[in-house]
Length: 394
Image 1 (spheres, rainbow, N blue to C red):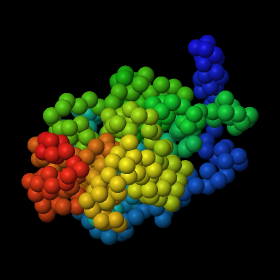
Image 2: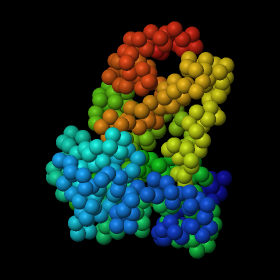
Image 3: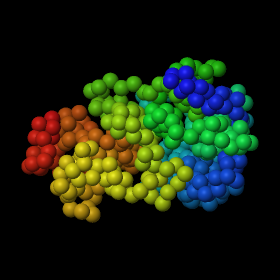
Image 4: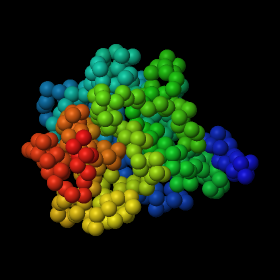
């Protein structure tokens, strides 16, 4: 049996080693519907050239601001559109981040510079944005097949082959045996499709050719991520730039760090159990609206919980209210992306007010009840007969 399984996996492993990158356009002929949806996603448009996409620049660059020290002519690439927008200048064959970024939510300019004591790589680069190239620090995740020798890519943005591996053999002779389909992988390898970029960590070998890289150099789908990448370490009880004291991520782009410590992950749930990166009409490319998505596995009296007769009995909030939304308690917006704009945690763990107070972590109630203290919230939870008084008081 083991020999059979090994032989069954061999064609895909060999294909991943010999196939070349061909770009997402090669997928369009056979996968027109998926390609059409994907092409409209943020994944497909995270990095744009303002010369071909002038409409992508969100702020008015002609309006004076003390932080705005560059013009449209200086911008070679635009990055982002949902929470923040950053701007890169090209010098030689490298790109460098401009010193200001646009806060999309608040519609203001904010300084952009990784300070000492923040990202692990900061001590290895001069304290000057124009000496911190995006190639080793960003571009491996914002492109397909970034070549660290000649600094070229097959394509910018998160294209098909970022998740499916090199596709030349599949494009020439389509077969399930010569392309990586994350849906056919085991749950751990499947989630690595996203964790390769949606995590904070370091390559196992650093520096690489004299430079420190902040992405898993050498990895592509079809290989084993753990051979290239290690997640950022966390010491319980300590609050750092990357983690809260309980181990929940402190900043954006750490969904993978959160997820691998969750009960969901250990039970075989994958990122695409909830998300479809090809694009949907729902926020965050969820397969369905958030509550609908959660309640498919966690409906009333489900062995997965909640075990109450109705969702309202579990949440103690009225139907249709924000307090009755699963994500507001189990995925609170506590992970910073820019200024006071946060994204949702992916541990799926309810952080009680008492625990939050003890460890100085934002709790699951404070998102809606910011005007109330932890003592008020703890006392309220103690009155909920379906919630353990021992748990909420810890």
